[in-house]
Length: 464
Image (cartoon, rainbow, N blue to C red; front, side):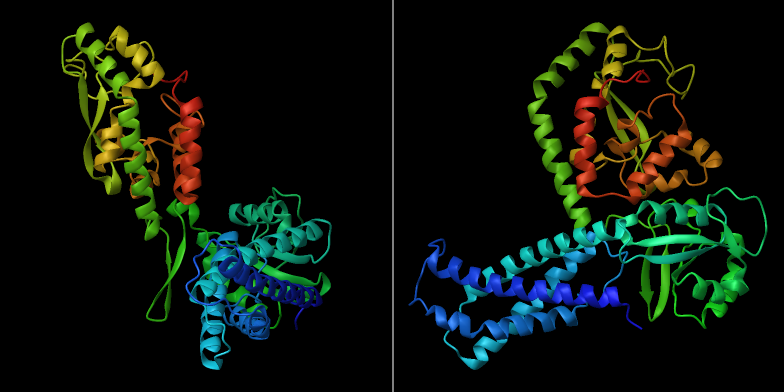
């Protein structure tokens, strides 16, 4: 049964899409023939011919949107999925319209106008969808179009699921309570409403539309029984896997010859993401080296004049997939600093540092040569800070997910650093922030971290 609110949503978006397609087609005519922005090589077709083709445009456009799933709504649909779907729909609509126009020969076969129509309609539909959903989410927060949910389990994953549902009010899914077969201490403001066998009557009593199965990893054998009980109901069922704590990285579902696979340890940078991040690293590191080259030369001269030894210090660090590389820094210690002590963690008041070195470390200026590491591809501008192999082995023994940091390139700066977790601070907290960055990476997050680094990331009380 289709909910009445869903019928209203479909009707609203069909109507708005029709209006936007209608308007985009007229705008494309004006841009192509009346604006003067595009040179005219042939006679200008009459406006009547543009109006004559409008029914084809609107009808075929709505058909294309239907075929690409634009009227199958999911409360959890994300902005990126919405944008991709809208572009797919308008691309197919443009192809349909072009085919129809060239078949009927109505005298309005302009390739430039079709291209403008695709660009204008894509932007218009995306903007229209976002405005529409913003209005829907406002109504949902006020209590309209609300669906109720049960969460199976009371453990860490279940409580986190309930908190997330209550926080993301824009989805209109409100958790009613928990379902639990194993009694125990509760740590939530939601009640345990019953056991697995009570699900059918609870779904009917509370008009439940969604059931989230959020059992811990050691109880996944019970999932089959939960699904069997739910088979007689009409509620949507979603499985919340207990794997983020184990994996530490983003989860992705793929297909192997019809069999579903869940990837829990996979590099999140693939396809255009890799190209974009690498291009950004090359461009910004090259610009940075050029702009600050006088500062680099000045620091190099001071290091040479104030203490014997090389200007640059090369140290082995762990990078992408655990591979070692030689990281560059301005030398801030005596040349023989580790001859007797070996590799030890930097500490406040370290007597191995030179007077100039203490200043360079306090201001993070000793890290600037790593722009070269970024340029040649050993590092990225943003990512988890690299550690020495000896420390990596130590940390991985006490923190099982520590090696997940190496699924991406090490960074000159990172999410942990701009949030204050650097130097002699909690290693567990730093790992949490590093994994958060890996899971939630976007180009905009990289730009945000770079911005915060410029204004807040150079000086820190734990930089020594």
